[in-house]
Image 1 (cartoon, rainbow, N blue to C red):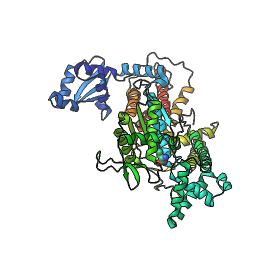
Image 2: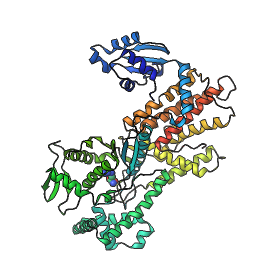
Image 3: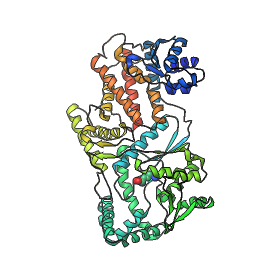
Image 4: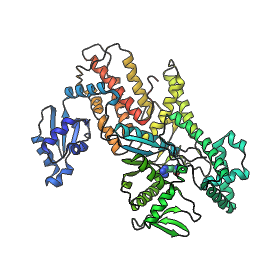
Length: 563
Ligand code: ARG
Protein backbone atom coordinates (compact mmCIF):
# COMPACT_ATOMS: atom_id res chain seq x y z
CA UNK A 1 0.00 0.00 0.00
CA UNK A 2 1.39 3.38 -1.00
CA UNK A 3 0.34 6.22 1.24
CA UNK A 4 -0.14 9.74 -0.10
CA UNK A 5 -1.38 8.03 -3.25
CA UNK A 6 -3.45 11.05 -4.17
CA UNK A 7 -0.36 13.27 -4.16
CA UNK A 8 1.72 10.79 -6.10
CA UNK A 9 -0.95 10.47 -8.77
CA UNK A 10 -1.52 14.22 -9.07
CA UNK A 11 2.24 14.75 -9.51
CA UNK A 12 2.52 11.87 -11.94
CA UNK A 13 -0.12 13.44 -14.18
CA UNK A 14 2.22 16.43 -14.54
CA UNK A 15 5.60 14.71 -14.36
CA UNK A 16 4.97 11.89 -16.79
CA UNK A 17 8.67 10.96 -17.06
CA UNK A 18 8.79 9.85 -13.43
CA UNK A 19 7.27 6.61 -12.19
CA UNK A 20 4.85 6.51 -9.27
CA UNK A 21 7.57 4.83 -7.25
CA UNK A 22 10.14 7.54 -8.01
CA UNK A 23 7.71 10.27 -7.05
CA UNK A 24 6.69 8.46 -3.89
CA UNK A 25 10.33 8.14 -2.81
CA UNK A 26 10.92 11.88 -3.16
CA UNK A 27 8.03 12.95 -0.92
CA UNK A 28 9.06 14.27 2.46
CA UNK A 29 7.67 16.08 5.46
CA UNK A 30 7.97 19.89 5.21
CA UNK A 31 10.39 21.60 7.61
CA UNK A 32 7.47 22.85 9.68
CA UNK A 33 3.80 21.93 9.60
CA UNK A 34 2.60 25.45 8.69
CA UNK A 35 4.37 24.97 5.33
CA UNK A 36 2.07 22.09 4.47
CA UNK A 37 1.57 18.38 5.13
CA UNK A 38 3.70 16.83 2.40
CA UNK A 39 6.51 18.38 0.38
CA UNK A 40 7.84 17.47 -3.06
CA UNK A 41 11.38 18.83 -3.61
CA UNK A 42 12.27 19.66 -7.20
CA UNK A 43 16.09 19.92 -6.95
CA UNK A 44 16.77 16.63 -8.64
CA UNK A 45 14.64 17.56 -11.67
CA UNK A 46 16.54 20.75 -12.46
CA UNK A 47 19.19 19.11 -14.61
CA UNK A 48 16.86 17.08 -16.80
CA UNK A 49 14.41 19.95 -17.26
CA UNK A 50 17.10 22.64 -17.71
CA UNK A 51 15.24 24.89 -15.31
CA UNK A 52 15.72 26.37 -11.86
CA UNK A 53 13.97 24.38 -9.11
CA UNK A 54 11.89 27.41 -8.08
CA UNK A 55 10.48 27.66 -11.61
CA UNK A 56 9.79 23.95 -11.78
CA UNK A 57 7.87 24.13 -8.50
CA UNK A 58 5.81 27.07 -9.75
CA UNK A 59 5.05 25.30 -13.06
CA UNK A 60 3.93 22.15 -11.28
CA UNK A 61 1.55 24.14 -9.10
CA UNK A 62 0.08 25.82 -12.18
CA UNK A 63 -0.46 22.54 -13.96
CA UNK A 64 -1.56 20.26 -11.15
CA UNK A 65 -5.13 19.25 -10.50
CA UNK A 66 -5.90 20.81 -7.10
CA UNK A 67 -9.13 18.86 -6.70
CA UNK A 68 -9.25 17.09 -3.34
CA UNK A 69 -6.53 19.17 -1.70
CA UNK A 70 -7.03 22.08 0.65
CA UNK A 71 -4.38 23.82 -1.47
CA UNK A 72 -1.13 23.20 -3.33
CA UNK A 73 1.52 25.94 -3.20
CA UNK A 74 5.08 26.50 -4.36
CA UNK A 75 7.46 27.53 -1.61
CA UNK A 76 10.82 28.13 -3.21
CA UNK A 77 11.99 24.83 -4.73
CA UNK A 78 9.24 22.82 -2.98
CA UNK A 79 5.72 21.96 -4.01
CA UNK A 80 3.82 21.86 -0.72
CA UNK A 81 0.56 20.01 -0.36
CA UNK A 82 -2.07 20.88 2.21
CA UNK A 83 -4.30 17.87 2.53
CA UNK A 84 -8.03 18.18 2.86
CA UNK A 85 -8.33 17.57 6.59
CA UNK A 86 -11.77 16.00 6.71
CA UNK A 87 -11.11 13.66 3.80
CA UNK A 88 -7.69 12.67 5.13
CA UNK A 89 -8.90 12.08 8.64
CA UNK A 90 -11.67 9.84 7.34
CA UNK A 91 -9.36 7.91 5.07
CA UNK A 92 -6.48 7.43 7.52
CA UNK A 93 -8.53 6.56 10.58
CA UNK A 94 -10.75 4.16 8.66
CA UNK A 95 -7.71 2.43 7.17
CA UNK A 96 -5.96 1.95 10.52
CA UNK A 97 -9.18 0.94 12.24
CA UNK A 98 -9.97 -1.70 9.58
CA UNK A 99 -6.46 -3.07 9.07
CA UNK A 100 -5.25 -2.95 12.69
CA UNK A 101 -1.81 -4.59 12.93
CA UNK A 102 -1.70 -5.10 9.16
CA UNK A 103 -1.67 -1.34 8.61
CA UNK A 104 1.60 -0.48 6.90
CA UNK A 105 2.14 -3.99 5.50
CA UNK A 106 4.13 -3.76 2.30
CA UNK A 107 4.10 -6.61 -0.19
CA UNK A 108 7.19 -5.52 -2.16
CA UNK A 109 9.33 -8.39 -0.86
CA UNK A 110 7.09 -11.04 -2.47
CA UNK A 111 8.22 -13.64 0.01
CA UNK A 112 11.88 -13.53 -1.06
CA UNK A 113 14.27 -14.74 1.63
CA UNK A 114 16.58 -12.44 3.55
CA UNK A 115 19.14 -14.14 5.76
CA UNK A 116 20.09 -12.17 8.84
CA UNK A 117 23.33 -13.11 10.60
CA UNK A 118 22.75 -11.79 14.10
CA UNK A 119 23.78 -12.04 17.76
CA UNK A 120 26.57 -14.58 17.09
CA UNK A 121 28.29 -14.44 20.50
CA UNK A 122 31.43 -16.39 21.23
CA UNK A 123 31.16 -19.58 23.22
CA UNK A 124 32.84 -19.67 26.63
CA UNK A 125 32.66 -15.91 27.00
CA UNK A 126 29.88 -13.76 28.39
CA UNK A 127 27.64 -12.18 25.82
CA UNK A 128 28.82 -8.59 25.52
CA UNK A 129 26.83 -5.41 25.00
CA UNK A 130 28.05 -5.54 21.39
CA UNK A 131 26.38 -8.90 20.94
CA UNK A 132 23.27 -7.47 22.55
CA UNK A 133 23.29 -4.76 19.90
CA UNK A 134 23.60 -7.34 17.15
CA UNK A 135 20.79 -9.37 18.71
CA UNK A 136 18.28 -6.56 19.06
CA UNK A 137 19.15 -4.77 15.80
CA UNK A 138 19.00 -8.09 13.94
CA UNK A 139 15.69 -9.00 15.53
CA UNK A 140 14.12 -5.62 14.71
CA UNK A 141 15.43 -5.79 11.15
CA UNK A 142 13.94 -9.27 10.81
CA UNK A 143 10.53 -7.91 11.86
CA UNK A 144 10.88 -4.93 9.52
CA UNK A 145 11.97 -7.26 6.71
CA UNK A 146 8.84 -9.35 7.20
CA UNK A 147 6.62 -6.25 7.37
CA UNK A 148 7.98 -5.37 3.92
CA UNK A 149 6.94 -8.70 2.48
CA UNK A 150 10.23 -10.62 2.69
CA UNK A 151 10.84 -13.85 4.59
CA UNK A 152 13.63 -13.32 7.15
CA UNK A 153 15.89 -16.18 8.24
CA UNK A 154 17.54 -15.41 11.58
CA UNK A 155 20.90 -17.10 11.87
CA UNK A 156 22.98 -17.19 15.05
CA UNK A 157 26.50 -17.69 13.67
CA UNK A 158 27.90 -18.76 17.03
CA UNK A 159 31.60 -18.20 17.53
CA UNK A 160 32.12 -21.81 18.51
CA UNK A 161 35.26 -22.61 16.52
CA UNK A 162 38.79 -21.27 16.32
CA UNK A 163 42.15 -21.32 18.08
CA UNK A 164 40.65 -19.94 21.28
CA UNK A 165 39.00 -23.31 21.91
CA UNK A 166 42.36 -25.00 21.60
CA UNK A 167 43.67 -22.59 24.22
CA UNK A 168 40.69 -23.24 26.43
CA UNK A 169 41.02 -27.00 26.17
CA UNK A 170 44.69 -26.69 27.01
CA UNK A 171 43.98 -24.43 29.99
CA UNK A 172 41.21 -26.68 31.27
CA UNK A 173 43.39 -29.74 31.07
CA UNK A 174 46.40 -28.01 32.59
CA UNK A 175 44.80 -26.27 35.57
CA UNK A 176 41.00 -26.44 35.34
CA UNK A 177 38.53 -28.53 37.30
CA UNK A 178 35.22 -30.03 36.32
CA UNK A 179 33.44 -28.87 39.49
CA UNK A 180 34.61 -25.33 39.04
CA UNK A 181 33.27 -25.20 35.48
CA UNK A 182 29.98 -26.76 36.51
CA UNK A 183 29.38 -24.29 39.31
CA UNK A 184 29.62 -21.21 37.07
CA UNK A 185 30.42 -22.23 33.51
CA UNK A 186 30.99 -19.06 31.51
CA UNK A 187 32.69 -17.12 34.30
CA UNK A 188 35.05 -20.04 34.94
CA UNK A 189 35.86 -20.62 31.28
CA UNK A 190 36.49 -16.91 30.89
CA UNK A 191 38.81 -17.03 33.89
CA UNK A 192 40.82 -19.90 32.31
CA UNK A 193 41.02 -17.95 29.08
CA UNK A 194 42.27 -14.79 30.81
CA UNK A 195 44.80 -16.87 32.80
CA UNK A 196 45.96 -18.53 29.61
CA UNK A 197 46.78 -15.16 28.08
CA UNK A 198 48.63 -14.02 31.20
CA UNK A 199 50.72 -17.17 31.25
CA UNK A 200 51.32 -17.10 27.50
CA UNK A 201 52.83 -13.63 27.87
CA UNK A 202 55.63 -15.19 29.96
CA UNK A 203 55.78 -18.40 28.00
CA UNK A 204 55.09 -18.32 24.29
CA UNK A 205 55.09 -22.11 23.94
CA UNK A 206 51.58 -22.11 25.45
CA UNK A 207 50.33 -20.53 22.25
CA UNK A 208 51.71 -23.48 20.30
CA UNK A 209 49.98 -25.87 22.70
CA UNK A 210 46.72 -24.03 22.17
CA UNK A 211 47.09 -24.14 18.41
CA UNK A 212 47.88 -27.83 18.53
CA UNK A 213 44.71 -28.56 20.50
CA UNK A 214 42.63 -26.63 18.03
CA UNK A 215 44.17 -28.62 15.21
CA UNK A 216 43.17 -31.79 17.07
CA UNK A 217 39.66 -30.44 17.42
CA UNK A 218 39.47 -29.73 13.72
CA UNK A 219 40.71 -33.21 12.94
CA UNK A 220 38.00 -34.77 15.10
CA UNK A 221 40.03 -35.87 18.14
CA UNK A 222 37.61 -37.53 20.56
CA UNK A 223 38.71 -35.84 23.80
CA UNK A 224 39.00 -32.41 22.24
CA UNK A 225 35.56 -32.80 20.72
CA UNK A 226 33.95 -33.92 23.97
CA UNK A 227 35.32 -30.96 25.92
CA UNK A 228 34.40 -28.54 23.19
CA UNK A 229 30.84 -29.85 23.07
CA UNK A 230 30.52 -29.49 26.81
CA UNK A 231 31.78 -25.88 26.80
CA UNK A 232 29.39 -25.11 23.96
CA UNK A 233 26.33 -26.62 25.61
CA UNK A 234 26.98 -24.79 28.89
CA UNK A 235 27.45 -21.51 27.07
CA UNK A 236 24.29 -21.89 25.03
CA UNK A 237 22.31 -22.49 28.21
CA UNK A 238 23.41 -19.10 29.51
CA UNK A 239 22.84 -17.31 26.20
CA UNK A 240 19.36 -18.79 26.01
CA UNK A 241 18.40 -17.14 29.29
CA UNK A 242 19.03 -13.78 27.68
CA UNK A 243 17.27 -14.69 24.43
CA UNK A 244 14.26 -15.90 26.42
CA UNK A 245 14.15 -12.72 28.44
CA UNK A 246 14.18 -10.66 25.27
CA UNK A 247 11.76 -13.11 23.61
CA UNK A 248 14.06 -13.50 20.62
CA UNK A 249 14.22 -16.72 18.65
CA UNK A 250 16.46 -17.96 15.82
CA UNK A 251 15.87 -20.08 12.76
CA UNK A 252 19.37 -21.51 12.90
CA UNK A 253 22.18 -21.91 15.44
CA UNK A 254 24.66 -23.06 12.83
CA UNK A 255 27.81 -21.51 14.19
CA UNK A 256 31.35 -21.54 12.86
CA UNK A 257 31.89 -25.21 13.76
CA UNK A 258 29.05 -26.21 11.44
CA UNK A 259 31.24 -25.27 8.49
CA UNK A 260 34.20 -27.44 9.51
CA UNK A 261 33.42 -29.96 6.77
CA UNK A 262 32.26 -27.36 4.26
CA UNK A 263 35.46 -25.40 3.78
CA UNK A 264 37.18 -27.78 1.36
CA UNK A 265 34.74 -26.67 -1.27
CA UNK A 266 35.81 -23.06 -0.79
CA UNK A 267 39.49 -23.98 -0.97
CA UNK A 268 38.85 -26.09 -4.10
CA UNK A 269 37.17 -23.24 -5.95
CA UNK A 270 39.89 -20.82 -4.90
CA UNK A 271 42.54 -23.26 -6.16
CA UNK A 272 40.71 -23.95 -9.37
CA UNK A 273 40.50 -20.23 -10.07
CA UNK A 274 44.15 -19.75 -9.18
CA UNK A 275 43.30 -17.32 -6.44
CA UNK A 276 45.31 -18.87 -3.62
CA UNK A 277 48.80 -17.52 -3.07
CA UNK A 278 51.34 -18.68 -0.55
CA UNK A 279 52.64 -16.09 1.86
CA UNK A 280 54.99 -17.03 4.72
CA UNK A 281 53.60 -20.54 4.64
CA UNK A 282 49.99 -19.36 4.82
CA UNK A 283 47.43 -19.47 2.02
CA UNK A 284 45.97 -16.10 1.17
CA UNK A 285 43.88 -14.37 -1.49
CA UNK A 286 45.49 -11.16 -2.63
CA UNK A 287 43.01 -8.30 -2.91
CA UNK A 288 45.36 -5.41 -3.57
CA UNK A 289 44.39 -5.23 -7.24
CA UNK A 290 40.79 -4.56 -6.19
CA UNK A 291 41.74 -1.93 -3.68
CA UNK A 292 45.36 -1.13 -2.77
CA UNK A 293 44.34 -0.58 0.88
CA UNK A 294 42.77 -3.99 1.24
CA UNK A 295 44.87 -6.52 3.15
CA UNK A 296 44.85 -10.10 1.81
CA UNK A 297 42.19 -12.54 2.98
CA UNK A 298 43.75 -15.34 5.05
CA UNK A 299 42.33 -18.72 4.08
CA UNK A 300 44.67 -21.20 5.76
CA UNK A 301 47.34 -20.75 8.38
CA UNK A 302 50.81 -22.25 7.92
CA UNK A 303 49.78 -25.30 10.02
CA UNK A 304 46.84 -25.87 7.69
CA UNK A 305 44.19 -24.67 10.16
CA UNK A 306 41.35 -22.64 8.72
CA UNK A 307 40.25 -19.22 9.86
CA UNK A 308 37.25 -17.05 10.65
CA UNK A 309 37.29 -15.89 7.02
CA UNK A 310 37.35 -19.43 5.62
CA UNK A 311 34.32 -20.33 7.70
CA UNK A 312 32.48 -17.19 6.66
CA UNK A 313 33.10 -17.97 2.99
CA UNK A 314 31.77 -21.50 3.49
CA UNK A 315 28.77 -20.08 5.37
CA UNK A 316 28.01 -17.62 2.56
CA UNK A 317 27.99 -20.45 -0.01
CA UNK A 318 25.88 -22.64 2.25
CA UNK A 319 23.35 -19.85 2.81
CA UNK A 320 22.99 -19.14 -0.87
CA UNK A 321 22.47 -22.84 -1.62
CA UNK A 322 20.12 -23.46 1.29
CA UNK A 323 18.00 -20.32 1.25
CA UNK A 324 18.60 -18.77 -2.15
CA UNK A 325 18.49 -15.39 -0.41
CA UNK A 326 17.57 -12.13 -2.15
CA UNK A 327 19.69 -10.29 0.41
CA UNK A 328 22.11 -11.57 3.00
CA UNK A 329 22.61 -9.26 5.98
CA UNK A 330 25.35 -9.45 8.61
CA UNK A 331 24.58 -7.47 11.74
CA UNK A 332 28.09 -7.10 13.11
CA UNK A 333 29.99 -4.23 14.77
CA UNK A 334 31.71 -1.63 12.61
CA UNK A 335 35.14 -2.85 13.72
CA UNK A 336 34.71 -5.82 11.36
CA UNK A 337 34.11 -3.63 8.32
CA UNK A 338 37.27 -4.76 6.54
CA UNK A 339 36.47 -8.43 7.12
CA UNK A 340 33.21 -8.10 5.23
CA UNK A 341 34.75 -6.04 2.46
CA UNK A 342 37.32 -8.81 2.05
CA UNK A 343 34.69 -11.53 2.18
CA UNK A 344 32.59 -9.91 -0.54
CA UNK A 345 35.68 -9.30 -2.66
CA UNK A 346 36.76 -12.94 -2.43
CA UNK A 347 33.26 -14.17 -3.31
CA UNK A 348 33.22 -11.85 -6.33
CA UNK A 349 36.60 -13.16 -7.46
CA UNK A 350 35.22 -16.68 -7.09
CA UNK A 351 32.63 -15.66 -9.67
CA UNK A 352 29.55 -15.39 -7.46
CA UNK A 353 27.45 -12.49 -8.64
CA UNK A 354 25.28 -12.76 -5.57
CA UNK A 355 28.19 -11.34 -3.56
CA UNK A 356 26.57 -7.99 -4.33
CA UNK A 357 23.52 -9.02 -2.28
CA UNK A 358 25.62 -9.32 0.86
CA UNK A 359 25.44 -6.36 3.21
CA UNK A 360 27.37 -5.67 6.36
CA UNK A 361 24.92 -3.97 8.71
CA UNK A 362 27.49 -2.22 10.85
CA UNK A 363 26.80 -0.63 14.21
CA UNK A 364 28.66 1.60 16.64
CA UNK A 365 30.30 0.97 19.96
CA UNK A 366 28.43 0.99 23.18
CA UNK A 367 29.97 2.32 26.36
CA UNK A 368 28.57 1.78 29.78
CA UNK A 369 28.48 4.87 31.98
CA UNK A 370 31.42 6.08 29.93
CA UNK A 371 33.48 2.88 30.20
CA UNK A 372 34.55 0.59 27.37
CA UNK A 373 34.46 -3.13 27.75
CA UNK A 374 36.92 -5.82 26.91
CA UNK A 375 36.65 -9.56 27.50
CA UNK A 376 40.32 -10.17 27.11
CA UNK A 377 41.01 -8.28 30.33
CA UNK A 378 38.07 -9.97 31.98
CA UNK A 379 36.33 -6.70 32.81
CA UNK A 380 32.86 -7.07 31.41
CA UNK A 381 29.44 -5.69 32.01
CA UNK A 382 27.16 -8.69 32.20
CA UNK A 383 24.00 -8.39 30.22
CA UNK A 384 22.06 -10.27 32.82
CA UNK A 385 23.00 -7.61 35.39
CA UNK A 386 21.90 -4.84 33.05
CA UNK A 387 18.51 -6.48 32.56
CA UNK A 388 18.15 -7.15 36.30
CA UNK A 389 18.94 -3.52 37.14
CA UNK A 390 16.54 -2.28 34.45
CA UNK A 391 13.84 -4.51 35.93
CA UNK A 392 14.41 -3.04 39.41
CA UNK A 393 14.28 0.53 38.18
CA UNK A 394 11.08 -0.15 36.23
CA UNK A 395 9.49 -1.83 39.23
CA UNK A 396 10.24 1.16 41.44
CA UNK A 397 8.50 3.55 39.07
CA UNK A 398 5.51 1.28 38.60
CA UNK A 399 5.09 1.04 42.37
CA UNK A 400 5.04 4.83 42.60
CA UNK A 401 2.81 5.52 39.60
CA UNK A 402 0.40 2.65 39.73
CA UNK A 403 0.42 0.92 43.11
CA UNK A 404 -2.85 -0.90 42.32
CA UNK A 405 -1.47 -2.66 39.23
CA UNK A 406 -1.59 -6.46 39.38
CA UNK A 407 1.39 -8.63 38.36
CA UNK A 408 3.90 -5.80 38.67
CA UNK A 409 6.78 -8.17 38.13
CA UNK A 410 5.75 -9.17 34.61
CA UNK A 411 5.18 -5.56 33.65
CA UNK A 412 8.49 -4.48 35.22
CA UNK A 413 10.27 -7.09 33.09
CA UNK A 414 8.51 -5.89 29.93
CA UNK A 415 9.33 -2.29 30.74
CA UNK A 416 12.90 -2.91 31.91
CA UNK A 417 13.92 -5.12 28.99
CA UNK A 418 11.90 -2.91 26.63
CA UNK A 419 13.79 0.15 27.85
CA UNK A 420 17.17 -1.44 27.18
CA UNK A 421 16.13 -2.63 23.72
CA UNK A 422 14.46 0.64 22.75
CA UNK A 423 17.45 2.69 23.79
CA UNK A 424 19.70 0.53 21.68
CA UNK A 425 17.46 0.93 18.64
CA UNK A 426 16.63 4.59 18.99
CA UNK A 427 20.02 5.85 17.79
CA UNK A 428 21.19 5.56 14.18
CA UNK A 429 22.89 2.22 14.32
CA UNK A 430 26.35 3.42 13.29
CA UNK A 431 26.46 6.00 16.11
CA UNK A 432 28.41 5.22 19.24
CA UNK A 433 26.42 5.78 22.39
CA UNK A 434 26.64 5.60 26.12
CA UNK A 435 24.37 3.61 28.27
CA UNK A 436 23.09 5.17 31.47
CA UNK A 437 20.43 2.95 32.91
CA UNK A 438 18.73 5.63 35.04
CA UNK A 439 17.99 7.64 31.92
CA UNK A 440 17.08 4.69 29.77
CA UNK A 441 14.32 3.47 32.11
CA UNK A 442 12.65 6.85 32.68
CA UNK A 443 8.95 7.10 31.86
CA UNK A 444 9.43 10.55 30.33
CA UNK A 445 11.70 11.73 27.53
CA UNK A 446 13.04 9.77 24.58
CA UNK A 447 12.66 6.32 26.08
CA UNK A 448 10.92 3.02 25.43
CA UNK A 449 8.90 3.28 28.65
CA UNK A 450 7.57 6.64 27.43
CA UNK A 451 6.17 4.97 24.31
CA UNK A 452 4.86 2.02 26.31
CA UNK A 453 3.27 4.42 28.82
CA UNK A 454 1.61 6.41 26.04
CA UNK A 455 0.18 3.25 24.57
CA UNK A 456 -1.07 2.09 28.00
CA UNK A 457 -2.68 5.50 28.50
CA UNK A 458 -4.53 5.19 25.16
CA UNK A 459 -5.66 1.71 26.12
CA UNK A 460 -6.96 2.91 29.45
CA UNK A 461 -9.10 5.57 27.75
CA UNK A 462 -10.63 2.86 25.59
CA UNK A 463 -11.36 0.76 28.67
CA UNK A 464 -13.31 3.65 30.24
CA UNK A 465 -15.97 3.76 27.53
CA UNK A 466 -18.67 1.37 26.47
CA UNK A 467 -19.19 3.09 23.09
CA UNK A 468 -19.20 0.61 20.21
CA UNK A 469 -16.60 2.06 17.86
CA UNK A 470 -17.56 2.48 14.22
CA UNK A 471 -15.58 3.52 11.16
CA UNK A 472 -18.23 5.97 9.92
CA UNK A 473 -17.91 9.75 10.18
CA UNK A 474 -14.31 10.01 11.28
CA UNK A 475 -14.27 13.74 10.59
CA UNK A 476 -11.59 15.20 12.79
CA UNK A 477 -10.36 18.43 11.30
CA UNK A 478 -9.24 20.47 14.32
CA UNK A 479 -5.58 21.43 14.61
CA UNK A 480 -5.20 19.43 17.83
CA UNK A 481 -5.73 16.10 16.07
CA UNK A 482 -4.15 16.97 12.73
CA UNK A 483 -0.61 16.27 13.89
CA UNK A 484 -1.61 12.78 15.01
CA UNK A 485 -3.46 12.04 11.78
CA UNK A 486 -0.59 13.06 9.50
CA UNK A 487 1.80 11.03 11.64
CA UNK A 488 -0.46 8.00 11.38
CA UNK A 489 -0.65 8.65 7.64
CA UNK A 490 3.15 8.45 7.43
CA UNK A 491 3.45 5.03 9.04
CA UNK A 492 3.46 2.92 5.83
CA UNK A 493 6.13 5.14 4.34
CA UNK A 494 8.14 4.93 7.55
CA UNK A 495 8.04 1.13 7.44
CA UNK A 496 9.41 1.19 3.89
CA UNK A 497 12.11 3.67 4.73
CA UNK A 498 13.23 1.62 7.73
CA UNK A 499 13.76 -1.34 5.40
CA UNK A 500 15.41 0.67 2.61
CA UNK A 501 17.92 2.11 5.06
CA UNK A 502 18.12 -1.02 7.23
CA UNK A 503 17.46 1.30 10.16
CA UNK A 504 15.26 0.25 13.05
CA UNK A 505 15.89 3.69 14.55
CA UNK A 506 13.49 5.12 11.96
CA UNK A 507 10.68 3.14 13.60
CA UNK A 508 11.83 4.08 17.12
CA UNK A 509 11.94 7.78 16.27
CA UNK A 510 8.55 7.50 14.61
CA UNK A 511 7.07 5.91 17.76
CA UNK A 512 8.47 8.76 19.86
CA UNK A 513 6.94 11.34 17.50
CA UNK A 514 3.55 9.70 17.56
CA UNK A 515 3.73 9.46 21.36
CA UNK A 516 4.57 13.14 21.68
CA UNK A 517 1.75 14.16 19.36
CA UNK A 518 -0.71 12.02 21.28
CA UNK A 519 0.37 13.24 24.72
CA UNK A 520 0.03 16.84 23.63
CA UNK A 521 -3.48 16.13 22.45
CA UNK A 522 -4.31 14.16 25.59
CA UNK A 523 -3.20 17.02 27.85
CA UNK A 524 -5.36 19.61 26.06
CA UNK A 525 -8.54 17.77 25.09
CA UNK A 526 -11.54 16.21 26.72
CA UNK A 527 -11.53 13.00 24.75
CA UNK A 528 -14.44 11.32 26.54
CA UNK A 529 -16.91 14.24 26.28
CA UNK A 530 -20.27 13.01 24.95
CA UNK A 531 -20.70 14.91 21.69
CA UNK A 532 -21.02 14.19 17.97
CA UNK A 533 -17.27 13.53 17.59
CA UNK A 534 -16.85 11.10 20.48
CA UNK A 535 -16.71 8.08 18.19
CA UNK A 536 -14.15 9.75 15.90
CA UNK A 537 -11.93 10.71 18.85
CA UNK A 538 -12.08 7.21 20.27
CA UNK A 539 -11.16 5.74 16.89
CA UNK A 540 -8.24 8.16 16.86
CA UNK A 541 -7.13 6.91 20.28
CA UNK A 542 -7.55 3.33 19.12
CA UNK A 543 -5.55 4.05 15.95
CA UNK A 544 -2.72 5.53 18.00
CA UNK A 545 -2.60 2.44 20.18
CA UNK A 546 -2.71 0.14 17.12
CA UNK A 547 0.23 1.90 15.48
CA UNK A 548 2.25 2.26 18.70
CA UNK A 549 1.74 -1.41 19.49
CA UNK A 550 2.79 -2.36 15.97
CA UNK A 551 5.84 -0.07 16.10
CA UNK A 552 6.92 -1.62 19.40
CA UNK A 553 6.36 -5.10 18.00
CA UNK A 554 8.62 -4.30 15.05
CA UNK A 555 11.30 -3.18 17.49
CA UNK A 556 10.92 -6.30 19.61
CA UNK A 557 9.54 -4.37 22.59
CA UNK A 558 6.47 -5.49 24.54
CA UNK A 559 3.42 -3.24 24.82
CA UNK A 560 1.85 -3.75 28.28
CA UNK A 561 -1.88 -2.98 28.52
CA UNK A 562 -1.33 -1.19 31.82
CA UNK A 563 1.72 0.08 33.62
N1 ARG B 1 31.43 -14.19 16.72
C1 ARG B 1 31.86 -12.99 16.09
C2 ARG B 1 32.32 -11.98 17.11
O1 ARG B 1 31.86 -11.98 18.22
C3 ARG B 1 30.77 -12.35 15.26
C4 ARG B 1 30.31 -13.18 14.09
C5 ARG B 1 29.57 -12.37 13.11
N2 ARG B 1 29.08 -13.14 12.00
C6 ARG B 1 29.84 -13.57 10.99
N3 ARG B 1 29.26 -14.31 10.06
N4 ARG B 1 31.13 -13.29 10.90
O2 ARG B 1 33.13 -11.13 16.79
